[in-house]
View 1: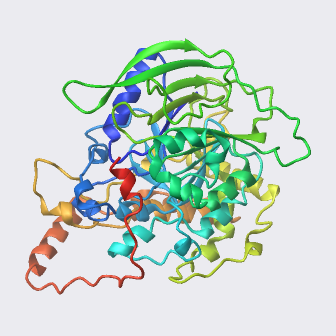
View 2 (view 1 turned 90 degrees about the horizontal axis):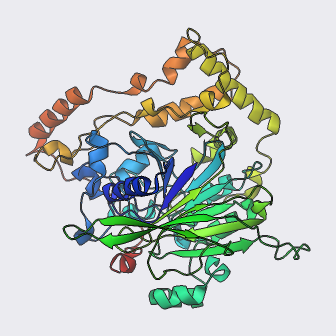
View 3 (view 1 turned 120 degrees about the vertical axis):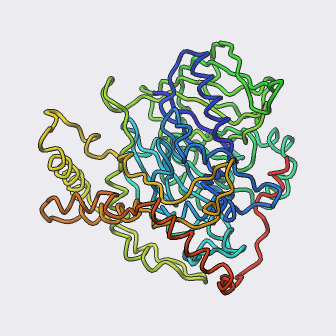
Length: 522
């Protein structure tokens, strides 16, 4: 199966899909999954735009609203993590993950899911030391400061991630780069290309120390990031400090199809031309941040004969612009039978971690630093408990489909994250309309959050599965009539137009500068 990885999106969703469908056309291949490494900017309307933490000149609607409205549909399943330029209004509706629209899934603050049998982890946000050991204290409506602090990664998410055990993760996504990752690639070439990174590099401040610790602990096969708007690859040898230093890096057999982004004569979207090249002996990722033709590649890797988890291949990608390296397509070996549909699935192990730490998460709202006790996260679950969760999913699936149960249904069928969980709960921007609804908050709470909470409760209990159970897992139970509620919103808005008191804002806690503002201008 082929998986595309994309760097910083900055609202250019339509451009990305156009590039990928063109790659599919000229190479005769099908891309099964797209991974977006943050700064996605999922803006549904003008209310969401207000929660985008960027300078005024960057506040544009982008193209996500076309997918939210249904005008366009994502041509392949897409997984998204958060960066430091997002619609905080929307992402905080589904902190544990959920569908942003049809075929586009947000991973939440931290998450692990499965696709084609491989495990994919995601960590949203960027590292800021002054917020790392605080709780998620921000509340709506967000102040200017809280629009930024809300996307700073927290210790809780890292501690939960550290509890993941075998089978190891195939892929981890983060927005900012793990600290020190440039030491494992051609750092000189990177710093020549991005001179503004030199000072942070020399001061040991370039990157995220928490995710580097995560990388070395979990040893995923691949780690993808964005944020710095440069293509950079590295290979982390997890044996380098062990006795087994004689082990060689994993070899790969590659067939590479390269695509060149060229500037179209009548628009700014990249178009794609194709050439075929054979890779003979360069098995390691490219370590140059740019190349002569700025060519993202489709790479087929064969790692059956080596333990590739002794090495992590890192790749940072650029932002969406003509002649920039913002896309990479890799072929992975799926771990479900060939011919079986590739489905996005819950990860039972991760759901157990969420369940076992819920009592911590529920009160994790301190506005001051309160370091967590690592012992609270040790020995959270057993293999027997993981098996029990899988069995509970099977029970739910069998009861739900009892009238037309497939004879040989699979665990993937039972664990599937249903796309039907997506429900529109707010007005969608229309460029040809000046509807005041575009400035109003959602008409009702996003039901996906409640469904997730109910799911974790049900799979960790021994209660009988009944129709009431299915009702607790049905989004319609917690959804409102959007059209009727919007009429009520408009009536209330009109009635209060001249008498509504000034809206109270959260008091500023600390003045944050606009993170990565300088690299938005490059």
